[in-house]
Amino acid sequence: MLRLPLERAEALFPPKELPRGCFWVDYAILNRLVQFNNVLNIQLRNLLSLIDLWERPEDGGML
Image 1 (cartoon, one colour):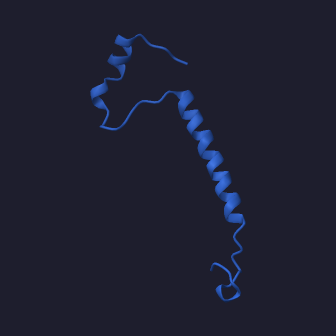
Image 2 (image 1 turned 30 degrees about the horizontal axis):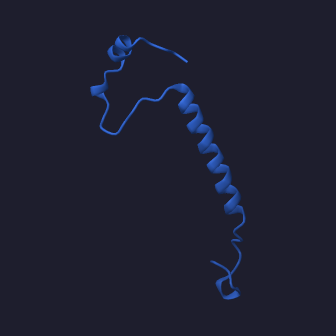
Image 3 (image 1 turned 60 degrees about the vertical axis):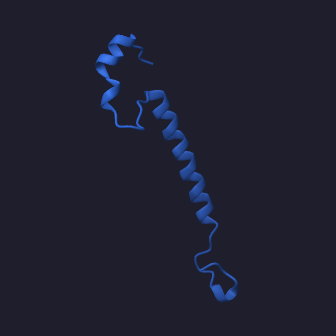
C-alpha cells in the first residue's frame, strides 16, 4: 500500500475537492469491494436459477 505524509497527501488530494458524501478509497479497499460484489452476483445468479420460468400461475407457479 502506498503511504504518503499527510502534507503530501493533502497536496495531491485536497479534501475540499470531493463532493459531499464522497471519500477516497485505496486499492485494497477497492479490491475487497469488487470481491464482495462478485460474491453477491454469484449468489443472485444461483437464486435466479431456482426460479422455473415455465411454471404457470394457474398451476400454482409465480409467473
